[in-house]
Length: 185
Image (cartoon, rainbow, N blue to C red):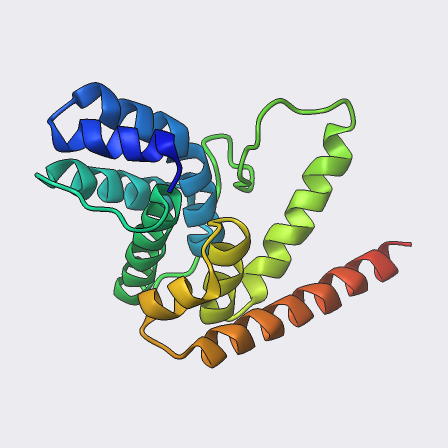
């Protein structure tokens, strides 16, 4: 945990509402992108992130041993897993308010927005085809910045299971993305 996170947690534990706002502003986009990649549904992803921050704010004291980002990412993954379990019967294509497919936003669009949008669509599709357990491990490690041991603890599985899920997930992503690139040329 870096000094800024320690300072924010210290302020949070003393009831400083501004610290909560700083934590939210600092992590909301990354957590929303993580939830969106896990759930493939923008509304559900927003709900998960909101629920995580609401539960975080309700805490009276907070003791953090790892990174705040990692802790929040784990909370998002746990809530996403619960949401999927609760809504397993419903499957639909996530759309934004304009009826377009949802993709995580990473800031200003470059001049070649069409190409970037297509690459994001291909990656989102490939991630969406992974079994949930593999998708969660890949996203928590790459996007959430969690170590494999932290993921194993949060999922209550062995480190070897996490490593296997990660390896198989990456292999499937490479295969799917290579097929897409090959068929596009």
